[in-house]
Image (cartoon, rainbow, N blue to C red; front, side, top):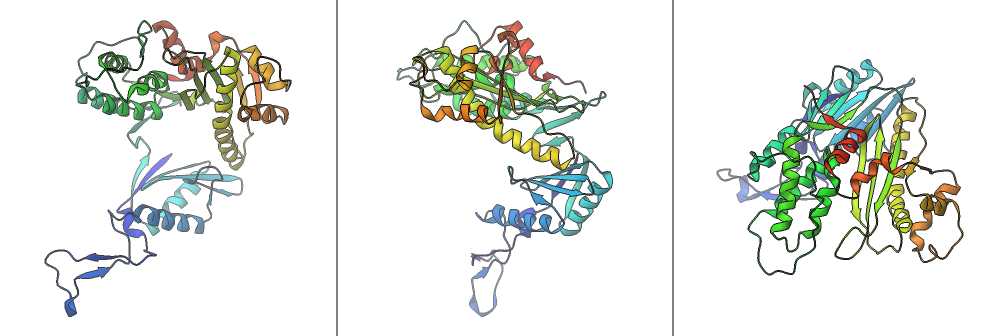
Length: 408
């Protein structure tokens, strides 16, 4: 996977609207004019990023690429059974594919149209370090970012903790009028960026403390510092993808029934793996109170299927382009009653009240588009997304979901 960066990307975009700007100080125009019309976009203009994207999109399509049906920043080109994938984020471009010759040709075409810096094999993108291990696996980590936020919030010398949540501490919202003298919201935001990028093992912990953004108190800040302490001992951890040719796509869905002490609402959690590494995950408090464990699990499965269908379709699109086999959309669930509800449309007493919006699950299962299978709670990887766990259990699940220490 090669990395390219477009130099002054926004300046390539041609303006469609008439926009005028004042001339720089010291510049004099003929006939007394004091403004000029912009023919191209400039940095700071609200249309600049959109105009640049349209310019890039038009050119990439002209050299044989098509845009993905599921991700507008992904472009796909297939020639004689060989494929090239192009992923763009503003002015950062990643190129990969099955043919080194096609990759070289695409890079040459891009460089002939735009001024670019070629970094070769991708090693650092959007704050994420890409490490190519000796065994062929690839690890995505953010050790530098963790060091930065630990220093920013004065936790660079803290004692490491074995898990991100102190399971003996139960947090509730506060009605206190006292104001917390700590950068609580800023810290949670910094942790959320890390969690969504490369650290699914802190997903529940970050989601948990984010429930108290309105009136955070000392106990809530202590919970945030606990996450920092966990990161202190796991700085080098990141997502590892194995070199196995078998894609092995699978999803996990779980729920913690009535886990929130303030309103008895449940927490949903899901996780999707490809090549033994997580590619999508989430931890979210449910919007309504569930009357049973199976109901909470059913609602959680609905959320997981919504995310899973998008991830699965995107993966299948890439696999078809690469000439590979498309995987099944399979979910593992550890609640037998929930699984029965997905396959049996009978409205029995404990399920007939469930909101109709969640019953799309039954249609998906009936059509064979989704497979739901049972797994033991001990092997339920999404358990780490729904509740705080003790050190040994958290460590085991972290390794199982594909987050490991990175060896340079």
